[in-house]
Image 1 (cartoon, rainbow, N blue to C red):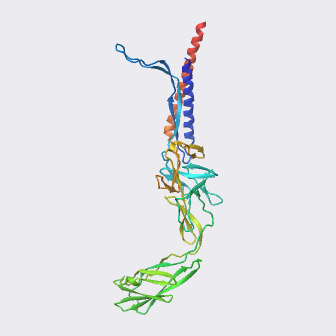
Image 2 (tube, rainbow, N blue to C red; image 1 turned 180 degrees about the horizontal axis):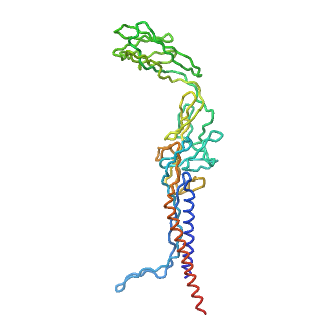
Image 3 (cartoon, rainbow, N blue to C red; image 1 turned 60 degrees about the vertical axis):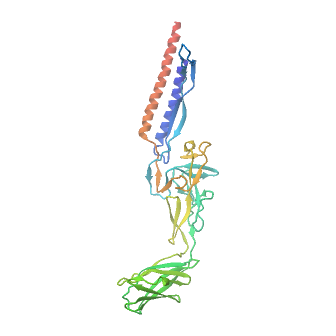
Length: 392
């Protein structure tokens, strides 16, 4: 009789835990990156009242008879299925599409999170809402990344600069009109830069040569000359389709020589002045691309993603973060889209994966289970009351 009382108590405790877990899930229905949890029950040890007997020649065997001693919570598991995406439009808001966790660090402690609502702090570091610094790889001055090295703080300081680059190559495209009279010229100016970022102008003079049927253009710039020949609008001599002026090789292969169109122009050159960071964007592979005032775009950093052999073994630490445990395995750190890690979506956040219909159903189940176990206690009490009344 007392066994039923204690079984009822264990049922009350277990179903109270289920109510607590379900209530926490519902409370976090709008928490970014939250993963719902569920309670698993198991029966406790059973008291043996009769052991099993082996079958004999003339008698059958007997099964064991046991009385259960209640229920307990065997575990609380986390559902790591991905939540829906919520567009925000902020470049700092990130979402992992697939497996993996962002890595944040406070002091010497690393934590892992699916909540990608990040901001820039006063030092230009990418940080989570609780102050954890997002980890990744910082690019070298030339924009190259070494993702094989150790991860560190990602910093995008205000006023970051990209150095100047001297112009060494340029290209021209468009059309030189074939009906231009022999001896007439077309002048095109090109901006070039030295190693300090100082700009200067190089003029290329295209002079119509040949004859009405023999379409040729003489190109002169900085004391250098070249000659272009055309047939049916296309260049016929590819060996002389470039001119080098003050160390800058100008590719002329993109020029054509049709009639009626005069569109010859400089289509590009690889030099630039120094520039300061104006804005940034984050690609699917986690690379942070900076846009500078001189028009240059260069990699600044790459966000790292950690994966685990057993994500269910992670321990929640609050602030939508986890820490590794002995049963989660060590983190495998890689770039987004590598080593089983998911890609990154910028301008969006991962919503909670709580299913409200399931949670409200669990509330009903837990409430009825609690009521049923309470009824076990009241019924056992009534039986005990009858037993004590036998003395009357």
